[in-house]
Amino acid sequence: MKVRDTLLNVGLLAMTLLPIGCTKAPSPESPLSIKLYQSWELQPGDMIADRKVLGGLGDISIALDGNQVYAPFDGRTQLDNRRCLIFSSPDVPAYLFRLCGLKEPHLGEVSQGEAIGNGDLLLFAALRKQPNGTWAIVEPAKTILERMLKKTA
Image (cartoon, rainbow, N blue to C red; front, side, top):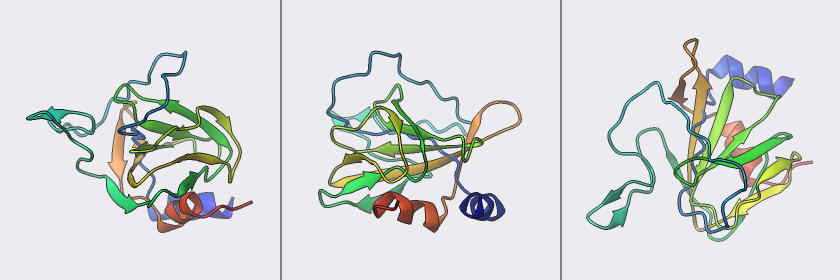
């Protein structure tokens, strides 16, 4: 509860977990389609002059150098319609995390501290659910990013 309270007090974690460049075969379930509160023309996964857009407004870029990314809480991972990984958890129900750039992402139910993917570059966005049902990108808490980059029990 302490981490959750900290996250909510800081007003962070608007998650649009859309992993870009995922190489794992698609999940048998339909990809998530997340309606953003903000409307930007360019989104991760879009193409410009035969080049893939890797990030957009609200994404935090982190050099992974082949290292793992871990589940910050018990939760679930799914691919979105742009092939980014979306992480959701009952521990932070008003938030989603979008992770783009992961190779071979782990899909389905995950436990806190379990590896959910690796890669060279992580593009991360936190989304917060709005009263009208859309999702707004918000600044993520450093504590959440630390939990995702260091294995915790």
